[in-house]
Amino acid sequence: MTLEQEGYTKNLDTITLLRFLRARKFDVQLAKQMFTESEKWRSEFGGGVDNLARTFDYTEKPEVFKYYPQYYHKTDKDGRPVYVEQLGKVDLEALRKVTTDERMLQNLVTEYEKLADPRLPAASRKAGCLLETCCTIMDMKGVGLAKAGQVYGYLQRASGISQNYYPERLGKLYVINAPWGFSGVFAVVKRFLDPVTVAKIHVLGSGYKSELLAQVPKENLPKEFGGECECKGGCQLSDEGPWQDPQWARTPKRAQPVDNIPATESHTGEGVPTGTDGNPGMVQEQTGGHAAPAAQ
Image (cartoon, rainbow, N blue to C red; front, side, top):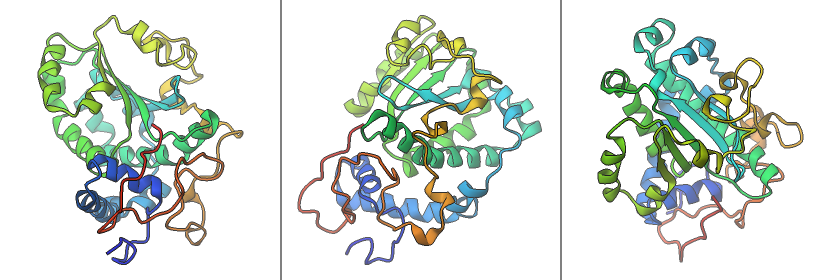
């Protein structure tokens, strides 16, 4: 029985379904289970993810980012949005005075929705090819056991949301300023990870700049990480990227009347090369073969 026959009406475009299939190595039943669990979560979290993404107002963001910066900023050399997270700056006591873990998670989900539309579609238009992933910079400067323990609960929930409900969004991950011993731990852990995932992860110490600049243009990389970008008001609050450029940006689907958006329409929107035939309904009892993964 197809998803449509089971009553699912949203997120049935080929590109979305392919992400769930890839996440479960094209095991159709596992991918179908992952998708249906995701749809259930989407209907419940924050009163419904679609509505949350339209209405969430993170008014405390400037204060939150003083103690836990997390932001998208321009693109890497492959055209992918760059996501920066500075775990070493976490100050839980200060954070709890300006926000809550639940608000932080709601912001995380809203940003994931914005990554899907408008960030990735705009980046795809500019690059001239379909982009589905981002380049992540995880700055560990200042991280110790005490700080890591402070946000363990939040990080555990955030990681669960990412893995279970937004699969296949990681293109590359640069862990910079990795503390002593981290590389050794990762060397052990990576033996248990999928080789495809391991190839995406780069664990670097304080001498990370040359390798990071090989992936992110210096004009796009914030100055504090060795680049040349100094956005007015600060890179972390600028949200600079193709999604802010009228040449590449389009109105996000969530801002359009629901009746105008077919369930099987790709999230990439107008003018984006899809790399697929656009036909939905791949997660079925029988597929008759694997569809080719979209470009990443």
